[in-house]
Length: 378
Image 1 (cartoon, helix red, strand yellow):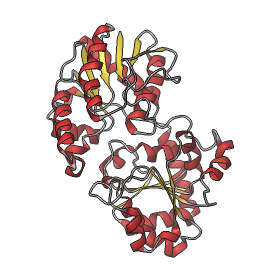
Image 2 (tube, rainbow, N blue to C red; image 1 turned 135 degrees about the vertical axis):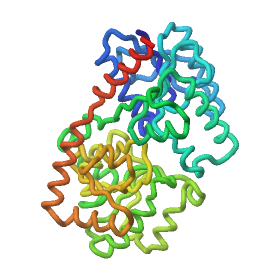
Image 3 (tube, rainbow, N blue to C red; image 1 turned 90 degrees about the vertical axis):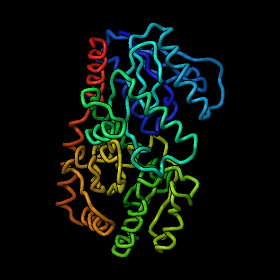
Image 4 (cartoon, rainbow, N blue to C red; image 1 turned 120 degrees about the horizontal axis):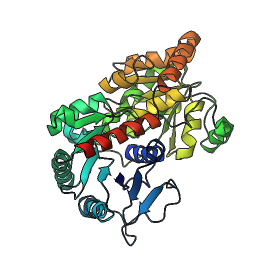
């Protein structure tokens, strides 16, 4: 069987879609060595050096700048046409961007349908049109893959796709997220980002659903208790603040008078993330919605206890291995408890490590191949 995979996110390894694509492609040839895998690259990605040797790179032409329209043209025309021209049996789009028409059987991974759940993510004419396009196209896929039962229920409801047309394949932390593996780099990472000796970590985006404001509010309590000893390190590329999608968190922190307890370190290189997790005393993820919540699982795999909101997906994926809370006051209490109560801390670390070991990309890849096989039989 020959599978052509859309490679739009190959050069974005720090995004959820980029991580999914890279980890999937690293493991698919291992679990299905008799299958052929081709990565169809958009025009702005040429000759990438890090494609697995067992995967064939298919390039689409001269380099050009990325644009919203260029992405749509690649998804709707270039990718499906190339999948047909290289005699692929299946075209797999590993994110919510399938073509309306495809000359071969189509599998689409829909990691979440956030724009359909929260209108704040559907701003502007182009975004509205794109969401309508990919929603209609997803219904024409031979099969949908998603990453949690929570996301599956949302897809069933919002896209009106039948249960039997959707398969859940969980994500997993990469092997490099480990309490010891690669720890020789930890001090260099501490120095690179000027990290304090002890800290609570937030790593991720700053859009509305991430609810980082809840964590900042929690730090009015944590800071009062011991903010000088355990500052909050906030990692991630900062957006243009002060609109509905990206509320101004810098300004909010000033109003809360907690700036002395915060360390904004900006974008973190992908290779530095395992050390960042290991160096943290607690990882906090206040997000009210995730398709899976991989960053919390990465923290657990690194031996760092985590506090999250009580979002349904965290209950599904993380079970009792994290401290789930309802509000900022409870988040503060959970953070403080994990910092000062050693027995609780050790228990949560051990539960987190045990839970993380249940997830593997090899299993995810094997379940994805099973979807391919079922689509071909159908």
